[in-house]
Amino acid sequence: MTMMTTELVALSKNRTRIMLSFDIKPLNLSARLLVQSLKLAKTSLTKKFKLRAAEYAKTLEERHQRGA
Image 1 (cartoon, rainbow, N blue to C red):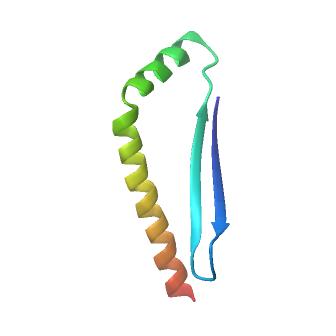
Image 2 (image 1 turned 90 degrees about the vertical axis):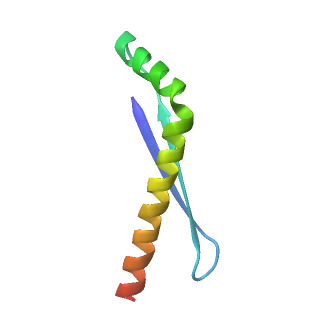
């Protein structure tokens, strides 16, 4: 079971902080093996995730500015 949480916090009129988190709970043996593999690659996966989340946030910001 995987749960993703997204939290938006208004910092000021023009700034918003976005916080993303994942919670992964394996329900069977094969899922446990997958989660164990993910734990071994956590550093590289975290780096890639942060880059893509930042790109997504930048895209949202640009779309908002064009629409305003």
